[in-house]
Image (cartoon, rainbow, N blue to C red; front, side):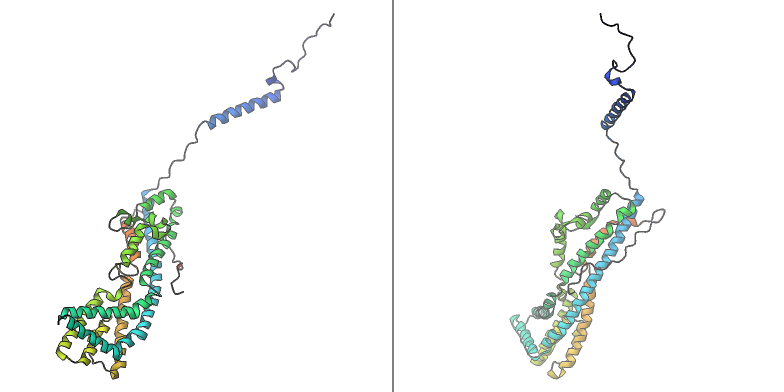
Length: 375
């Protein structure tokens, strides 16, 4: 007979597994609860941060800073262009003094010019207008060959114009990068703002125009159709930066002197006087003062004649140099002035003062990062 079972002992032997031990049960419950909570959170998307709204007053300050950056970049480009063209002018002085003036004043050149004038008269059957036009063109070509073409092999005003434009874009880009962080404008919104600002505006087709954003992000810049078209426009201009001897003002002076020459030839008939007057036309290609140079050309007068011509040419050089620096259609700053004019002009409406005036960021002048060609 089996032994009689006693009353059940209190323990864990007959409890369900998930209740074995108070400590283990509590941990299990906590783990399950934590997993349930984590699963619920994972099933819901985290709320997105609301977009940053930039106030109109901040955008006005952005535009003022862009204008300030453009002005500073223009000044930097102008410094480079001025240094380059000062060196160009020195070379023109030197070449004119060492090559053109001796050629122009020589006995054989005077003889040759007298033959040219006589030939022009004969071939034009005495037509005064045609004689003057041909003489003017010949003397301008002679100056190009003796002075401007050789100098351009070292410093080309057209190349200076393009490099100054590139420097403006580079300096403007560096300054614009400071604006978003300073004013708390998100980068993507700032980029969208730049896309609305015109930088190059030319006649159709549409790709001959470009926004400021396109110009700043073009890499390489020359592959941007609008930039290539802009440079081509200035390079191909009849009196562009590289063709200043044919500028309308100088051509008109040449023409006036040529007309005087032709008239005096008709009345004098002397070959020596013809030669002297032709020399006077050569000087007038480049100088306002040479039109009064009426002394007969003789070898004895050659030193005085050259000194007078040199003085007149120097005055004309200084005058033309200023035109090359300032002329927005054909000067070495033409590209810079086109871009800066578009950028600053499009933001002109931001110049109205807000309730509380905001000072635009002040950009310090930085050292030139593009060396001049002769350094």
